Amino acid sequence: QVQLVESGGGLVQAGGSLRLSCAASGRTFSSYAMGWFRQAPGKERECVAAINWSGTITYYADSVKGRFTISRDNAKDTGYLQMNSLKPEDTAVYYCAAGLSTAQLAAGARIGDSWGQGTQVTVSS
Image (cartoon, rainbow, N blue to C red; front, side, top):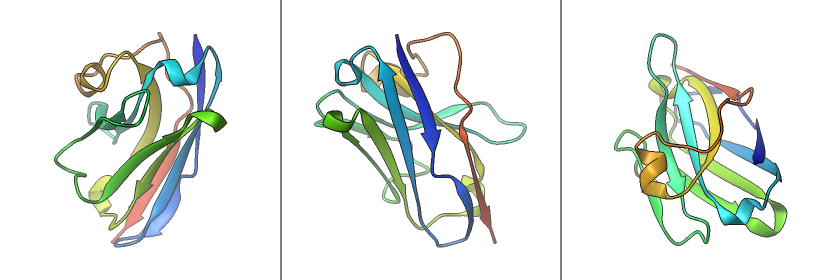
């Protein structure tokens, strides 16, 4: 099973940018699709972006489309989420996850029983 560790969160003003990283270890990272999820206080966790193993297929939630870009570097076993034009409603804990496909990740299906620590993103107005 692949282990994932998120980093790169922080406090940023509205309109700013952040780049999240997801470092993988364990089983071959490049075998899996990867997704970024977020959970805001009082809300359910949602998938905001996903990418297939080769980087040729991506998914974005409507709320982030045009502002967020997901990517991966299989040689470094690392995935990324570039977040631009951040809004206060993007405030959440962000998690990465592995899955069998972008479609499954978009539907909330992932590999593994537990989530990592996540990384906090706070956008001030």
